[in-house]
Image 1: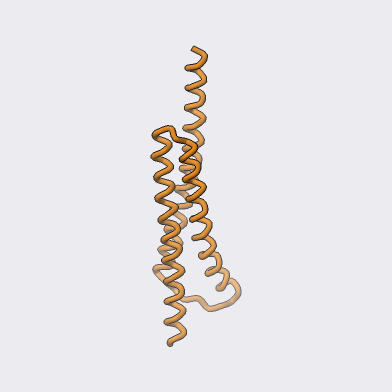
Image 2: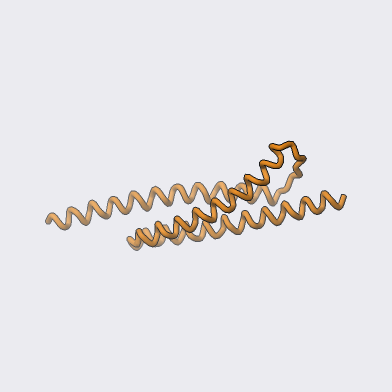
Length: 119
């Protein structure tokens, strides 16, 4: 029984690390979108790069955990790990949307500025 308890504790630690990385990424994504509102596109892209590093770190933890099961090791269910995976997936989607939005708004502003320069 102790082994299973230790296994669950280790999985809980991994889950919390995933959630912390994903949460940090979410904060950077939201800050990047605020920068986009202020037309601070370079800063927004820097924040997205930082967010991506946290997403990758969280994803790496998830992948290592899932690969254990793929190797045939018995896995235990953890609601916290499921939550961590859900959080990661949501933040990854937010990141991808923010990346596209910032690119679109930058291009739009460049076109608008170009037209102003022609006037």
